[in-house]
Length: 143
Image (tube, rainbow, N blue to C red; front, side, top):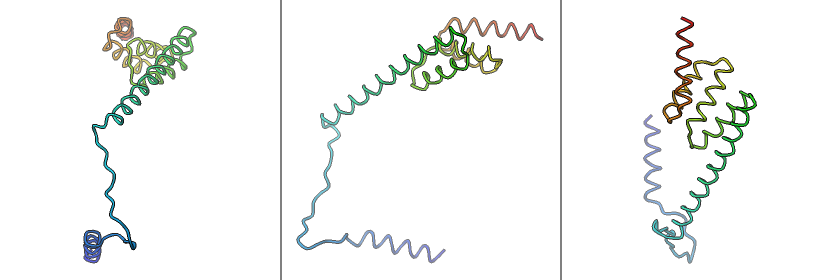
């Protein structure tokens, strides 16, 4: 332990006290700095952010359309996959949670369906709220 502390102290002193290797006739140059308020950099950053948001929105819309098409055709596993892709973009819609919940219910996963219905209800989807009430009524009828 003492040996490690001694070596770390020695290395720290060398790093602080010793300068980098200097060649003959070298001139000291300061590192380039970037002004955070440089309008060119700020505009470039804002443009990149806008392009990313536009790309995510386009991907969301494509996946949501594919999920709705799979839902109409009764392809429940595809619905779940497309909705997961659409929601991974960061855009949310209560209807997507509703159709994914319905797909889970059709596949027999009532617990996950209930979670999706609750989330859909949170995002003001009336169909999800109705499906949640229907699911609760079905569970009461079984008991």
